Image (cartoon, rainbow, N blue to C red; front, top):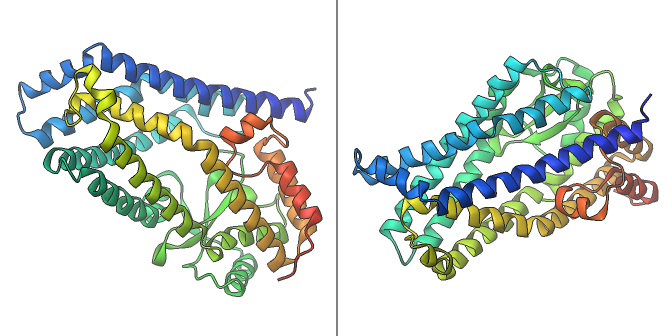
Length: 369
């Protein structure tokens, strides 16, 4: 029988390998589509029938992103269906998986087109100011998405219901009041219809803010352990981590657009592509992808620091050190999390501290509320 540690290593190795292949595959496709002339050919083909710029951009963007989604189906299916079933983590049928894939694709296409239409409009209409106008638009849109996520996106994939365990509900509401966090209510989603993994969180902004518990926690975690999980989530809001992340992302968005505004011609001019030409969209996506990869270690490092601070606050408010440790051990086992990953894996893939580090910090924690 395979040892649990070997199983975890195999699972994480496959997942990380597929993630790397996915990124490389996308970069190769973008480069080939741009330099082969297919991008300009597609733009010219559409322009023959549609001279209206917004419509041209819409059709081009629709074809590009949908083409990628179709080409990427085999890799996505292997990663999130075949592998998850192989390791006993998925309860989804193939039909349900494809349904979710296309729903996610629809949302991604809609968001992608909105972003590109705005980007192209500002770039075309305000050549000297597009960088900050795009930045403001993208930041506002990200805040709107965060606010609408629990009321529009989650219900598309999971069934919501108010938690039926009144004792658990009261325990969580008491904890939220103690930590000064206002929530709409406590909800449960049917994660077990898709996965064996466990999760919980505090989602939404303002009036949409609510606690969401996966039903995969039920029967496997004690009320005290679930309380510590939620204390950690409440700590993020108490420490204003979401606001800090929004501010950080806004600053990075302004920075990257300004850099592209000043130096983008260095990349576009040698290829004979105007920055405002929709045929250069693959090149824009490539630039943003490279930027994101370059920033990943720093963003993960910042996120891990926030997670450690949230752990400390959760322990301070609950005083449940043993329950925190047992909760982390159970989550690691249930989600097949690698306890002590190699350093480079931690740097590029871990926005939370590895389990071994979180448990060690909890054992050493002596703080008070």
